[in-house]
Length: 430
Image (tube, rainbow, N blue to C red):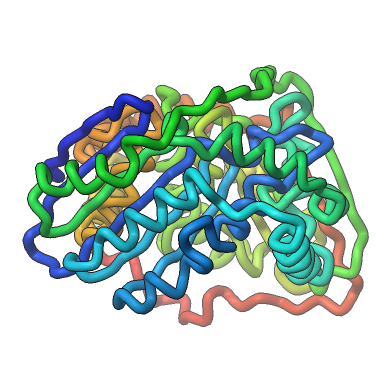
């Protein structure tokens, strides 16, 4: 059980405080409820750009990183479709350094043409390195655009095109900052040994006088249910062919979210997983396969990713996949397998809340979903999933509502071995 206090300051800032006396370190996590879904279709990549800009210094601190490092800490950040998250971990005695820096960049971030041009260059190089210059770098651009037609999840976090970042104007970036990076759009969570009341007063001292800002969000249309299959094939310079099958699924708070999550585990978690066993080891039509979910706050995706084995065509592999899906749709998985996967997930959740830094990040994330107490109840929600829930979700994975992306290799395929293990090995021991 993670015990925490929650406070809302007069300016709208949500404050979550967890006291952990087992560590000499404190983690300050600041989450802004802004991600790529909040961008204009003509100006994408801004949330990710700001992940970089926020480290460019503020009015009273030339640099963010240097004071944190001088205080014996480290810091980092990440951006996704729904949120932008910043976190710093440092000795308890220096926790106010992180609070001061976070408050200063929340109110007085240095946004000028020099800092913008510098970070545009950094992000542009990142775009080239991870998207343009990688054989499979544009997969998420293609898959997102195939699966979403009206929702802003149809472009990846890094941006729809590189030009949206390179052509970003200072006035557009300034508006984005003033609109989204205020206290009333933020959650600050702190985990460490400091007494919660003392910590609350420290937070108030740094953040309470920052004025709230008017937040203007672009209305997001709900992605309609998919009634027809969609197909895209790209014959690029891929070292090996890859098949992606994607279906719409519940968002993070949807009733079947955890059932979909468990189904992905049924298919591919560990070498004893049902689909891995059948497709890779028994039928030998796949060199590699995986199943996973995007886990987005709103309607997400259930994805299967498969690479054909040597001398196996894409058509043969795909036909085998549909046959195996049909078997799974007609026969409920054994209860023992479901319970085993539930236990694995519960264990993962428990271990994710061991360190103070993870607890700070998780508290802020769950609060962004609407309930910080999910940090204590998520394992219970997974435990409530039944065989019937799993069967219902598996039967949603049909041909008439699938998005199929085929990447065709260039004839010099690099075959990925089946995880480099012998057939009789199994890393799924309970």
